[in-house]
Image (cartoon, rainbow, N blue to C red; front, side):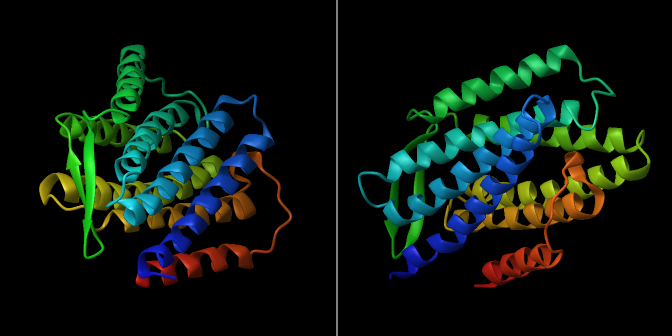
Amino acid sequence: MTAMSGNLIPLLLAALANLSLGIGVWARNHKDPSNRFFGIFSLAISIWTVSNGFLNIYAAGDWGYVWARLAFASASMIPLFFFLFATVFPSAIPPVPKTLSVVFTSAGILALVTSLTPLIVRDTTSFNGILTVVYGPLHSTFGIYFILCVGYSLFHFVRKLRLLNGNQAIQVRYLFLGIFIAITGGTVTNLLIPLLVGTSRFSQYGPLFSFVMVAMIAHAIIRHRFMDIRVVIRKGVVYVVAFVAAGTLLT
């Protein structure tokens, strides 16, 4: 097994962890908008994670740009469904301006469509195992959309924390911290470094930050009934996930 294909294993584990979490939340009550939005948010992270893994393996081949575009397409849905989730969990108070919802939703759909074209990714190459992505003219615009949408969503959760108390406040704190670490880490490695430095060599590490999010939300599910989910699971699972995450990041 080559080093590059070996690096795919932790990414596949991260994708599986996010997918399992998303399915678990969605299955709990798929009619609830917060469960649906979180489920799609987790699915988008899973697809983005897998795409980054295969992108780093096939960057020099004919499929390199395909995986890169799929990575951006799935990444375009992460801030949108995080925003939609933030508007309704644990309640729709305080409300989000309708104009802002229309702007972010429209921007997300536009980002999804353009991600599948040369407007964001033109080509990919790999030299000595180091990934290089040739970006299109809308790459910077994509970055602005991503940062603004994620930034406002996190700010909106801060606003909600001021109004919440008891178990709901605890749930939102775990959620906020886990997602903040995951999205900040992924944004730095997969968006800011390529934008500012011009290298994508660290993109394979971005999705691994999602292990922290999964671990913290799993802990919130077990200890604080996050999303009103009841599970029969040993607490040690949370610490196993955290251990795997730490070990993966250090390899």
